[in-house]
Amino acid sequence: MTFEDDVRAVARQIQDADAVTVISHIDADGITSEAIMMQACMDAGIPAQSVFVRQLEPMTMKYVPEDCSLKVFIDLGGAGQQNLLEERGGMGTEDVAIIDHHVAQNVETPYLQANGHPYGYTQLSAAGVGYLVAKEMNPPGHPHLGVLAQNAVVGNVGDMMAREHCGLTGPAREIAADGERAGTIRIVPQELNCYGISTRPLRVCLTFSDDPFIPGISNNELKTEAFLRKLGIEERTSGGRQQVWEDLDQDEKSAIINGLAQQMLATGQDISRLLAEHYIFPNEAKGTPLRNASEYATMLNACGRWAKPRVGGSAVCAGDRAQAYREGEEMLRHHKRIIREMMEHILDTGTTALSHMQHIHVGDRFPDTIVGIGGAGMALSKLDYEKPIMILCYLNDDPDLVKVSMRTNTRMVERGGVDLQAALITASEEIGGGGGGHKIAAGAYIPRNAEEGGFAERVNRIIAKQRN
Ligand SMILES: [Mn+2]
Image (cartoon, rainbow, N blue to C red):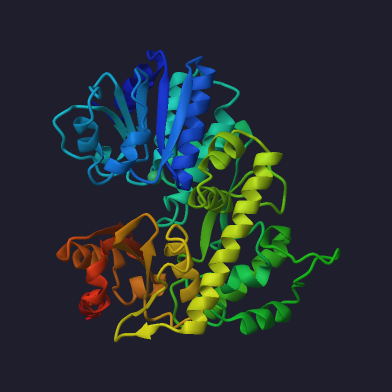
């Protein structure tokens, strides 16, 4: 079997179904996955409904309807998923299809599964696999394929598939090329590697960049202001609006990139991550968060975290630019406001510094869906960047657990040898919790009694060893 065979087999199974239920995850990858699969089913004339869950666990299985529709689980891999399906009655191989990108589990029931991971396609998210299934279900030249490619690129970028290589690679890159041919995506190579090119004021966009870490720019608003002034780059347009990266002409962009490169080289930094490929959506309005893949993903994550994944999935991704889009924008504004409040709270309260990291417990002051890696990253950009930050918080629906989010920056990963994923997995498993993520950003859930039991110190000891 090849990956293509698996994709084809899942597509056929969906096409043969009388009805489909798509069960998906509430992050940007899951939300775009849902949109892709719902559109594919609609185009194929198959009645379909969808369900969003935070993760597949015993508690959430009750949202999966007990009817005879084909259950398509997408982006829900990870701990216990397939065992849960086996435990639930009426879930034989003919009732279930799995579209995923997490490491597959060994289970007794040989569920039909499309997943690039076992074939070495590790940089292809669930939305990417979903797109390939949708493409297989519909004839070439299908009019919706361009929009589905756009959704798939948002899902891939949202799941950090473009991070490691400063751009998408392999099948995910081919999907972006499909979108470019269809006119829904403009691939911009060799662009500044920063977040917020369509909506963030220039100074903010540069100051918050920590991948790569740019001495004298990252974490440093005053120096960034001076840097832009020296290059003669206005922070406002002639109309008085705050200028964003996308507003700049090529000369201005080159001047900034050259200036940043010089600044990095002068301090012996590696400039290999200074440029990255960006994915612009030319059919979306300029200056909106839908204009590029990474900001689009943030909006969908905001919808998901504030319990409105449907606003993102079946509405915004499906092309609603009226009421649902305004609701999505409101979610995003709200999301950013709470993250800003959390950041201010962290800065006001201060973190507890250990030898190799810092930590703070925010209790139940902010919803656990918001206290995540993103907020930790923003807080770290205002703190001692050499010490990875750990934010702990309580969960509103599980009094026995504490959520842990950690973030560092590329400099500490590359030069310092820090690996937060490894640290959190080891430390949380020792005390009956579980964690995962990446070297630069990771999360875990731990038993509530363990936080007082020196969990932060435990992680600190592991990071100290990594740094030696
Ligand atoms: Mn995913």
